[in-house]
Image 1: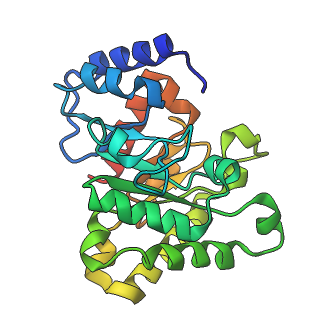
Image 2 (image 1 turned 45 degrees about the vertical axis):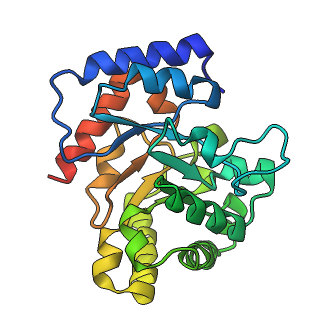
Length: 249
């Protein structure tokens, strides 16, 4: 909701221009516009194979009487990806862990790659409950998938207290976040084996900016980032993508 419809289209057009000459052959770069802009931006970027389109949220039911909600079928013509369980949507919709899992299963069934957000609140962190909270979230998520689905699954560890809109006093320590992300992959490995777990993407999210992204993606086991407000600035976003590419080269 940061941009107007016109503003979203302008960002997409600028990003399209900045893509020229970029080598992102080994990077998945995804932008997630608002619902009203999905069709327009998908059309604008349909010949630009360096950037995929994602949705910010979908309803966990495939269809039904839910006025104001958007189904997977309604976004499927435009997207290859979809964010699931972002903390803001969890708060707005009361989305519980089993509903996150249901959404993930339905997205995969429809050929859309889920980006699942996992993370603890400030109160949970201060109560030393981070490992318990994220482990429970990850275990519930793993119940909704099988071994063959893991390569299409991206799990974003996004501490809720670290999101820029929550005005964190300072960004999380990269070593600590990498430790949590290693735990998420270990839980997947315990369930489906090392080979399958290594093919699952694990991302970091929370106040990611061009001037700090390399601190996070250079940690072992970190495949990429989920970008928030910095993605509204195309040049910063391109710089972030390039730094992720360098770290994974």
